[in-house]
Amino acid sequence: MTAITLRKGAPGAQILGLGSYRPRRRVTNDELSTMMDTNDEWIQSRVGIAERRWASEDETLVEMAVAAGGKALAASGLAPEDVDLVIVASASLTAPIPGIGPQVAHRLGIPRPGAFDLNAGCAGFCYSLGLASDAIRSGDARNVLVVGVERLTDVTDLTDRTTAVIFADGAGAAVVGASEEPGIGPAVWGSDGDQYTAIEIAAGRSTMTMAGQAVYRWATTKLTETLVAAMDAAGVTAADIDVFAPHQANLRIVESMAKKLGLPESTVIARDIVQSGNTSAASIPLALTALQESGEAESGDLVLVLGYGAGLTFAGQVLRLP
Image 1 (tube, helix red, strand yellow):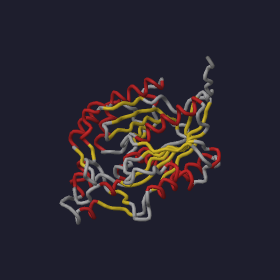
Image 2: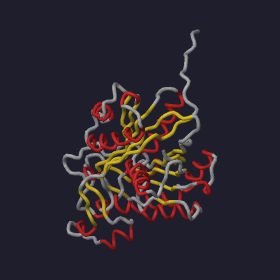
Image 3: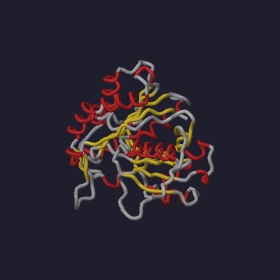
């Protein structure tokens, strides 16, 4: 019987460059108070958000993904033809067919790559990074563009204060390539499908509902163990972490997780949610680029990330910043 031959990939994978796109329109809590029964104090005390970005009509998912992906490509130093796989993570595509991965690749001038969309809710970027790393280490790809992009305002009732004050729009991207030393740790991922209705767009509806208290309890009581498992899998401890950048869902959740982990005082904590709101699959790369641009995080820093959300899905990893 003829044996099947497998490719041999690189020893590891690393992030080569990051990029982001934030919509032009800033929406403050005071502006929201003119649209619904809410106010700045109520919002900040519950979720920690001061403002968020809402996309305009011309800022489509594809346009935002292309903008973020183009910046990540430029930062990586690679040419479009060096990329052979594109993964776009999003939970807010309003048209199921076709996916936007091939469109994003085409717009960026990437010739005939593997391209697909992935929906793992707010964990989508971490799931995609795990797949990108595995594809490079298996030899199925040389370089991978991963994009997290959302227009959550398309699927949010903008008069419902339980969701409209939280969700927002934007895009973040990473170019992943081969490395001798691993720059992306093993993905520790999973799901709690018994709570699948906690965040959903039910059949026949066009907008999202969320059981906020249930999600908060789940995130603050169940997911710290995933962060510990991700560090264990990567062979590091909390004392080694330079940056903690979990999904930007709620500032209270971010700070609760950081406290439970016992991170050093020197660890930089991503708080991009204050200015950006919850951008689902885009939130982690948006937070990382913001920390790099501000100088709070530097090349070579060790980062602990965790994506979690609809499904309920979750995925944690340790990364090294490019």
